[in-house]
Amino acid sequence: MNADVSPVNSANAPSESEEALPGAAENGPTGERPEAAYLLGLADDAMVYAQRLSEWMTNAPQIEEDMALGNIALDLLGQARALYPYIGSIDGTGRGEDDYAMLRDERDWRNVHLVEQERGDFADEMARLLWFSAYQVELHTALTGSSDDVVVGVAGKALKEVRYHLDHASLWVVRLGDGTAESHRRMKAALERVQPHLAELFDDDDASVTAAELGVGVLPSSLHDGVVARVRRVVQEATLTLPDASPWRSRGGRAGIHSRPMGYLLAEMQHIARSHPGATW
Amino acid sequence: MYGNDVIDPNVPLNAAETAAYDEAAAHVEGRAVGEASQGGFDALIAADQRIEPRDAMPEKYRETLIRQIAQHAHSEIIGMQPEGNWITRAPSLRRKAILIAKVQDEAGHGLYLYSAAETLGVDRAELLDRLHDGKQKYSSIFNYPTLTWADCGAIGWLVDGAAIMNQVPLCRCSYGPYARAMIRVCKEESFHQRQGFEILWTLMRGTEAQQAMAQDAADRWWWPALAMFGPPDTGEAAKGGGHTEQSMAWGIKRFANDDLRQKFVDMMVPQADKLGIVLPDPDLRWNEERGHYDFGEIDWDEFWRVLRGDGPCNAERIEHRRSAHEEGAWVREAATAYAAKQASRRQESAA
Image 1: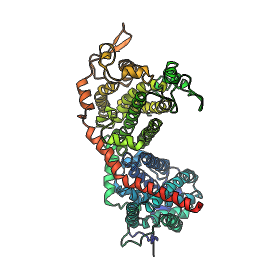
Image 2: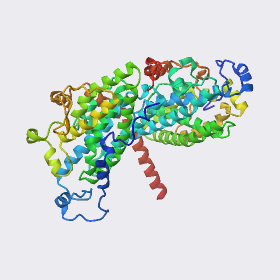
Image 3: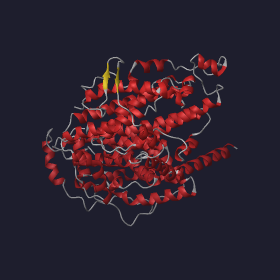
Image 4: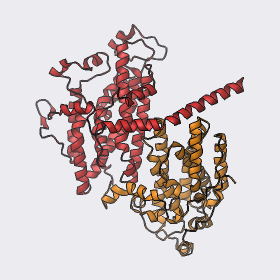
């Protein structure tokens, strides 16, 4: 079967839900609310992908694209910045956005492997952006029905942004797939390279199961078919087909198990902030 | 928390926040499209009217403008690199967001300026080739490295401040599309300059290491910023040739390099005091008689050396630009091929 990115529960995800659930009863402003872990995954996805996309600035194939990718990075950064302080207010720590972004070690990050992968060529980025933005469109559409007003607000704003991201990626995937022989070959290869990192997006880890039960979040597996349908339409228009399932798949990002590039990404992103403990910038 | 409360938004920090900008911006209204020029190029220049793309103009005027606008556009594009270098390392998310937006603005200015140049009959691809081949220049200031985070502050405060001082008079440039581009560019540059000041303000009120970082950046950027106004062109130096005289006659240039440099120094010294930064010039002092600050001798040997290609980052800047362009060639080719296919499909379906 093509496009086999169907959800497989991550064997790496620790079972935390039993421990986290009793906190839900307290649910006070300073107590830990169990949906915090789920929201952290969403915020970290946006943060880490913003970081990767921002690397394109001055490196894009044309100046318009420097601007466009910068714009998408800014949108994602904005999503993360909207979520972090809220998470800080419900996870019992009171942390601010820079505490999350600058002062957490690799094992404490909850993003999927897809967003932390190194920047490849432009086709690689468009393949990743196509999948990620299609995922975000489905995700934020669903989250506009969340029981949490803050999440509804963030999702409503993000939805407008990620629809544009999806349009942008779609246009490029079609142009590259249906452009020259070289661009077709590169786009095909990029879709194959991104494939192993897709299933993880749809894993129902403990945090998302809990958040879905509370009505705050949605089960990632419930987004799968919608996302694949969106991507498939674009890929077909690009005169390409979705690749076969890869022999391996990434897992564990939501449990803080990351791939090699993640440590380097954090080292670069956090270096200045960490070199000056307590400083204001 | 970030010093906004103590940075008075009503006190101008740069030339785009002064009356000179407002006057220039009010002055730019072009003639209505289709309105014939009265008496040709010389009469328009004499009447301080804008020359528009449809007007006849001397070939030298056209060439001068293409060279100047292209150089300006290239400066915006190359200027993305020194600060772009800090996007992935910005010390807070707020600073990261501001920096991404700023580098994006620079890309936008570049595109806007290339469009202005295109009204003179060249195209962007051709101008980029000339940049990549070293046939056209960009501002030599970007051949200096950004060594610490504080350099993002110093570039905003000093380099953007100097650029605005140069560009506000260009809002009244005789060539309409360039003048209109400058009005928009100056407005955005003005935000950048304020952001740069604020970065340094925050650092100077931070830890000792942060203060030292800010002072070091100001030490390194002050003199290159003064050199941005170009070599001396008043007094004895005015007889030395260069473009100043002709450009002034054509209404492309409105003030001499030395006059703009003096205005810049006069504006920056009180700001340095406010920041608590010591400018690296022992000869810098207020001259009551002149009503201006005196300042020391600029190292013009260094200026010419860097301009000729022997600066710390000349090779790196062009190589970065060239490799991004070359690595992206297959993408641009694909876009062109796809557009051609789409056009022929439309034709077929219309037939």
